[in-house]
Length: 239
Image (tube, rainbow, N blue to C red):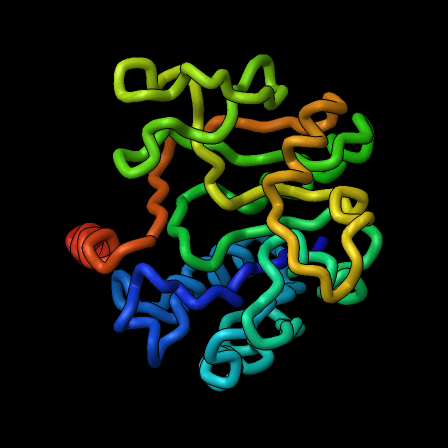
C-alpha cells in the first residue's frame, strides 16, 4: 500500500520561515514534521511513499533523498510552479500511486494516529465501494465550525448552523489524513488545479464517504505560534 504526503504548498501563514524552508521540513521535537510521518509509516510497514512537491522542491529532495535513511522508499511527484492543490496533486501523481487505495497525509500536520490502520481501512473501502475514508478530529480553536458531521461511521454535510462557538460539538475537522480510492480523483485531468473539498462533498452526496473520529493528539501546524507550542510539548515529553 502506498502513501501520498502532500508537501507542495508555500505555507504563506508561516512566512518568513517558509521563505527558505519548506513547511514540512520545519522542525518540532528535534526533527522535521515530515520525518515524524516517515518514521511512523516505516514502523507500520508502509514503506512506499510518494511525496508531491513544488515550493522549494530541491530543498525537500536534498533533505530526504530516496528515503533510505528513514526506512522508506520515496518517489517524488514534482508539480508545476505554483502547485496544483490537493486533488490536482493526486491526479498529477496518479501513475506513481497505482490502481489500489492509498493513504494520504498532509505534510504540515502532526498526529499520533497509527498508520497501521490504513491496511484494514483500504480493504473496507474496496468492499463498500466507498471513495474515501477520512480521519476526523475535534474542532481546534482556530476552526470551531469544523468540516463534516459523522454518524455511524458515515460522513455527512455539516449543517449551516452547526459548529459555531456554542454548538461546536456537532461537527468535526478533517485531520488531513485519509485512505482514498483512485476513483475519487478519476475525473481530474493531469495538470488541472483543483481542491479536494468539492470531490469530498460530491462523495457525500453519493453516500460513498466514511470516516472515524481520532481522539489522540493532532496539531495543524499552520502558524509560527502553533509550531513553537508543538515543539515545546514534544521536547517536554522526551525523556
